[in-house]
Length: 84
Image (cartoon, rainbow, N blue to C red):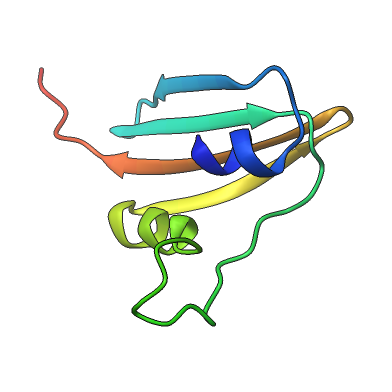
C-alpha cells in the first residue's frame, strides 16, 4: 500500500481481499500505474526504505503483478487452513 501511494502517482488506490476455493487469501493493491515493481536487492542493512517487495516475498506463499489496460494489481497470497 505504501509503495502504491508513493510511487504510482495515482489518487485512487484500492485494496482487494479475496478467498479462493484452494484455501488461499489474496491481498491485492490496485493502482493506475502500469510500472511493474521489482524486488530490490541493492539495499544495505542500514536503509529504512526499499525492502517492501522483499517483505511481501518473505511473508507470502506466492505473489505477482497483474497488468490491466488502465493500471495494475500487485498481490500476495497466504495459504489458510480450510475449515468445513
